[in-house]
Amino acid sequence: MGDGKRAKIAVITGAAQGILQADRGMEVGSRCGRGIARLFASGGGHSTIFSVWDSPWALDNRIVQVRGYVVGGFETSVLVDSQCTDKAIWFQFAGGAAAPELEAITQSTRPMYARKDKPRVAVKLQRDANLELLRHYWETSAKGERCTENTPTNELPDCRTYRVTATFVGRVDGVSKAVHIARLKKSLGGPTDWKGFGHMGYFDAQIVASSVEDVEAAEEQQ
Image (cartoon, rainbow, N blue to C red; front, side, top):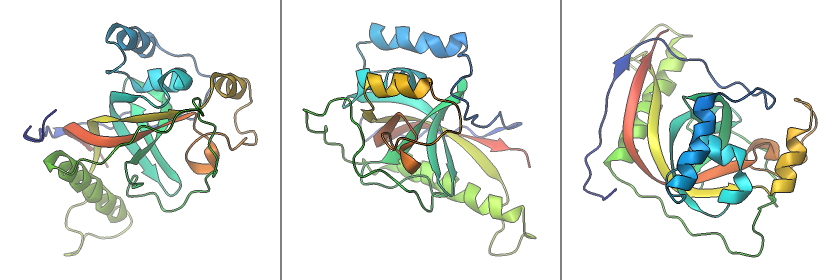
């Protein structure tokens, strides 16, 4: 994971896979569950997004490596696992930047961290070719989304959009086990308790990413 590692890009043309489903009650497929076994077998460094979602208190304030794609929107910046698309965690870079589509969020000023007695592990964003490549495809996709509503012009010549998958290293911030379990028992769409992360404190965990690797962009069909 050194600075000298060359950015890798594989552009794959194909149909876009299903987007994030915000249903906490959906059963988890076997490919999602296997992430926990891999997590503990590897000593905690390599994880999965599902593992972070499933046990946010266990990984709170720890550095992990996860792979997924970011879904952005007006009030959205979440990291999704392509093998487990109904589970997501909030995403931001060290320093506070998030998905380029994110414009506004209402956020709790006192998230309920699982480990209140320990200072947060410091993370600093590594600015390198991998990060530039990721942002390039994010910006291209943002322009491509606008093309669907307008005739292509010289200012917007590229109307392609991409699902950009990458490996992220960063710190996990997670709610306590008690908060997580209580939230699982709530009905979908109910009032938020503001104890989590992201917009309205909805998410039980977030990753504060410090580096990006192995960027892969899959062109989406319009």
